[in-house]
Amino acid sequence: MAKEKSQFVCSDCGGTSPKWLGKCPACGAWNSLVEGIAPQQGETKNRFAALSATAEVAVLADIEANEVERSPTGHEELDRVLGGGIVEGGVVLIGGDPGIGKSTLLLQALDSLQRQGKSTLYVTGEESGAQVALRSRRLGLERSQVRVLAEIQLEKILATLQAHTPDVAVIDSIQTVYSDQLSSAPGSVAQVRECAAHLTRAAKASGTCIVLVGHVTKEGALAGPRVLEHMVDTVLYFEGDTHGPFRLVRAIKNRFGAVNEIGVFAMTERGLKGVSNPSAIFLSQHAEPVPGSCVMVTLEGTRPLLVEIQALVDSGGPSPRRLSVGLDRDRLAMLLAVLHRHAGVACMDQDVFVNAVGGVRISEPAADLAVMLSIASSLRGKALPKGFFAFGEVGLAGEVRPAPRGQERLKEAAKLGFTVALVPKANAPKKAIAGLEVHAVERVEEALNLVRSLA
Ligand code: TYD
Ligand code: MG
Image (cartoon, rainbow, N blue to C red; front, side, top):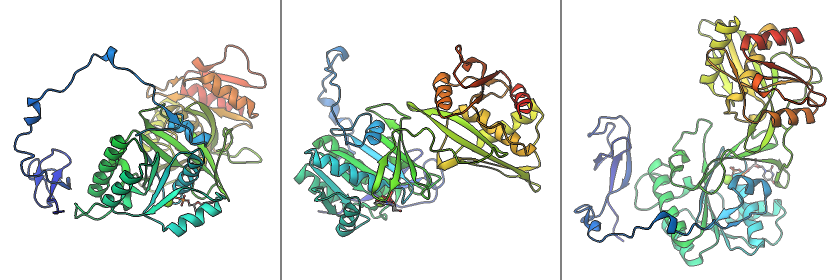
């Protein structure tokens, strides 16, 4: 086959150039040219030629809306984030740090799908067939019938998919796959995007469910799978501390189910095991309360999770640092400003570090109150009372806003033995919850005064 010509397309304005340039000749943007395949001669001649024949238009009400059929993978926590299971022709992207457990989880899922009579294909570009076999033995998958292909060339993978038409195929990982048609290196944005587009088309045409594995760095950068998010149907991200046992799988996008659902797993000697009752796993165990620590209840997806927020405030240099792990840094800066302006707690000359224990990422604003209280607690060197927790959003005017589904959060914490709650006024329970003393506040200064009176 003749090599197709490549061209460079600006990711900002769509301008093209036959060779790579640092600056787009059309719009002047820097570093925006990405390699792609040049359209064949004639293809560009008349883009509107297709208009000469009209396509069929249907009335919405007349189109049959079939509920998509799902095949459960047999791993309850994975099915939860997938929205019930895999979907025919669906494309799933699973991202995460290296070593977090993507290959392990997918091999386990393929094996159980195969045992349910689905045909599967595991395409490995990072490991040899022998290494995959070794892992399957370690996972205790005796006599696994999962078919394995060690291949990284896109054209060969596509041909194999066409020849075998499996029900599910895993491409581990999309960064190792390359197409002959492009001269850029495997793993570059151009290759990743081109290969994923071809695989997506193959999935839609054949009905095979394709799962793409992608590595992301902490910042989500590095020719990351981020560029693929809009192409695929479902995006799942692994979170968690690779040194600890727990892993979260979060649905960021799902055309076939709810987003922000999370699946919780524990990494064991024999692979990933679902954790069906995860509410207490992100608490660190202190015998006595320590300064700079505040527990919050987060509710993303359907299950409440208790997470400990830790803060350390320490005298800084001329330009003090504000660092956060698992929480938004801009939000931290905002909270420090609110704390100063509305509650008179100043951290201007202090380094401030905050951390969500266990490598969880908390994006909901209901964490605000706990972040604020842990900072104040660290600054004063005084611990919050034993059995204390808080949640609620903080606004720029110093108001404390309610968090959605407050009752569920309160009940979960009470169930785990927490005894004192600080919550927004609108989240105060109408009926007392057994064993729980609830303090409701409307403003941040009120919250800080209350905590001082409790301690
Ligand atoms: P892996 O699935 O290879 O990660 P990824 O594909 O996301 O890069 O997971 C590798 C890690 O998991 C490795 O550090 C070893 C650990 N592990 C276990 O603890 N138990 C097991 O049964 C397996 C297979 C791996
Ligand atoms: Mg892997």
